[in-house]
Length: 197
Image 1 (cartoon, helix red, strand yellow):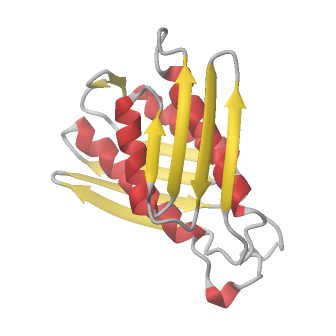
Image 2 (cartoon, one colour; image 1 turned 135 degrees about the vertical axis):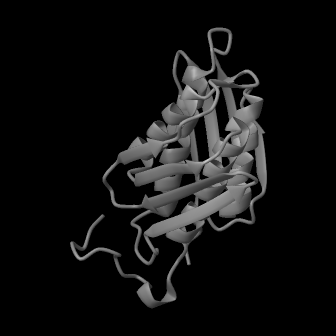
């Protein structure tokens, strides 16, 4: 089996980002993004998705975190698409429900080749520490557009915004793990009746 690893670098006037991933890892992770709460969330994806991740980012944080968060989503999406290759043999679909105390979220993903995001999270406050919760949508939109996936995110209940988004990221990691897993019964076969994704 070919290694499903990738490295992607994105350099713009707003951000400089390098993302290295191994889809068949053990959840080892290193993050230096300058956005501590995002690092915490990405660690959930790595750990629960069993994806090794190394992401280093420098962005225009003197303005705000918008460009950095969005561009990390873009770069991670590009890295996943590159590491995945032609998608033959993968399960393609993944889903997960994850609770954390009072919060419960569901994430469903399809490596369809068609980018689409449905994100329904009614946060109970607009900031988690210094992090603007609106930026989570920007992260996932960037990921979806560049990984070429359909992604449905639903926070089903929750009163604590930290718990709400942590359940989302944990469920995202677990859904990724399921969808990216190689199915021995589908070895070398494209998981689509169209013959292409």
